[in-house]
Structures are given as structure tokens and as C-alpha cells.
Image 1 (cartoon, rainbow, N blue to C red):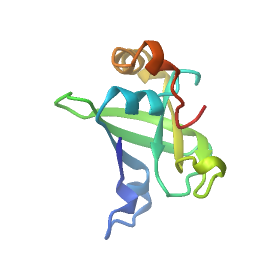
Image 2: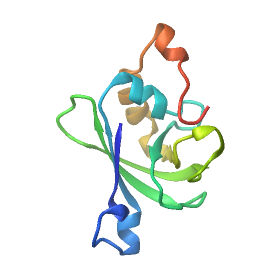
Image 3: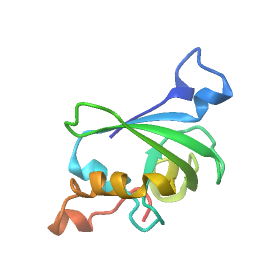
Image 4: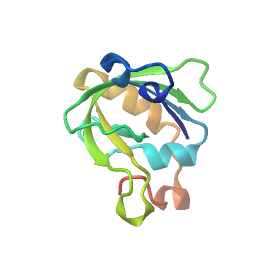
Length: 126
């Protein structure tokens, strides 16, 4: 998984840019680590060092495995792991999918999730 937070690119400071994040998920294990099925409507953990707050509205552009197009996802911050978190946890935010996004987006991500022993691996959140 290769996160690219638009707000962290040099020369891009406006507030609106900090509300758009890009996330590249290159394999099923990375998807498993980022996916948050226990959140109502589903969600994704996005590594970032930017200090977002609970409730912040964000827009994600997700490149999923070999999919040719990025998937646009609207959501809000429901989980925050700050920089320097205990247990060497990756800093970032959990984004809950908006109600209107939930069915299509959840299905898209869940079709790629690993099963068996790989499904028991730790994630970025739980």
C-alpha cells in the first residue's frame, strides 16, 4: 500500500487539497490491512502524517490492485492513529464510507479480500 496524501506534496497548501487523499493498494494483504469491515458502511485506513480530526470529511481516490481506474470514495474520519502511536502502529486515519457509497464500494473491496490464514493477519486498526 502506497499512500499519497495530496496535502503532503510540496507546493500544495490549500485546505481543500488536504481533504483529498490518494491510496494505492497493490495486493490483497495490503487491502486486508487497510479495510475496516467493522465500521458501519465499511471503511479504509489511510496512512498519513497529516493531523486530521474525527468527523473531518475527506475524499479518497483509491487505486485497487490491477483495476485500471481509481475508485472515488467519499467519507469521514472515524479513526485516528497519531504519529508516534504505541506499538509502532502506522500513523493515519480510518475513513468511513458515506451511506450512498456503502454497497458498491464494500462489494468491490470485499471481492478482493484474502481468505483462510491470511484473513487472520493483523490490520492497521484492530
